[in-house]
Length: 370
View 1 (cartoon, helix red, strand yellow):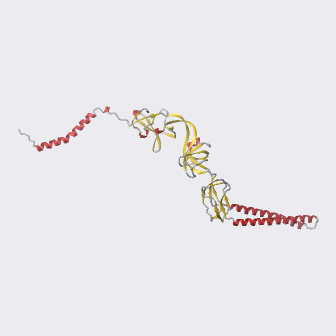
View 2 (cartoon, helix red, strand yellow; view 1 turned 120 degrees about the vertical axis):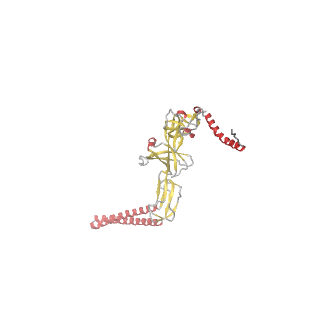
View 3 (tube, one colour; view 1 turned 60 degrees about the horizontal axis):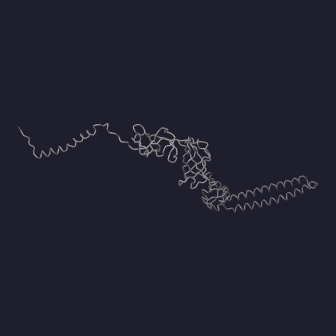
């Protein structure tokens, strides 16, 4: 019988091979032991959350909109003379002016000469009228005595009428000269604030050229475009709160609502007076809140609303402890609660604490709020 002989070298090689194979034999055995009963393996909830139920509450209904700050009336000011040099500008941008206050002065030397000529012509016309009247009076007496002919008397009456017409013409010329002289001073048509200046001393004035712009009475207003669906609740007299540049509230009142809508955007412009605009300036954009009065509304805690991709959502607990992401329509926040306008029923529950970390279909464990 042949005998087997294993030398030391071959024994060491076999041992190394056995060590390399042994882990691969052990792992399947352990896995088989751990997974002997898969039904006993339970899923772990994604998060522990609390829930809230929508409640009915009487709230101050508001409409939030963005708009621009504009002048109530911005007047373009200029002179009614051409070819006259500007001698002095009396105001700067931002100056508060009163009605009738001088703003720009033109060189009036030529206009003064024309006015003096008109006064001289008027005096000459008055003297000529006096002479014509005296001659006509004597002619009446002579005609009665039949000392002059009727033809001569008619000439005297015609001279009187001509003198009267020359006087009226001279008076009109003087009035025109005085009017032109008054045009040499540009005055504020109403009180207000100078918003723009485009005139310098020395330039030649031209009719129709803007020199200054005036915000009439310094009044500013907020103009916002409101969607067609939101117009029904807005009426003149409604209170508006506009956010100032530093966040400070500026209170105003709806003055008018545009009677027509833009055919493309289906919006209408709302005009709100701002009696005390504070730091607001014409040309700024500002967010405003139009108060629509009190109304019954369904509200949920503010932290239950999650904004994703620009839309508001809530998470409603469903079957098997899974949450369903549901899109809702919300109104402005009212302190710690927010109005739900659609997408939720009073019987629904929503995740309150922890909603911001959830996704659609996540497993949760609901606990009472402590």
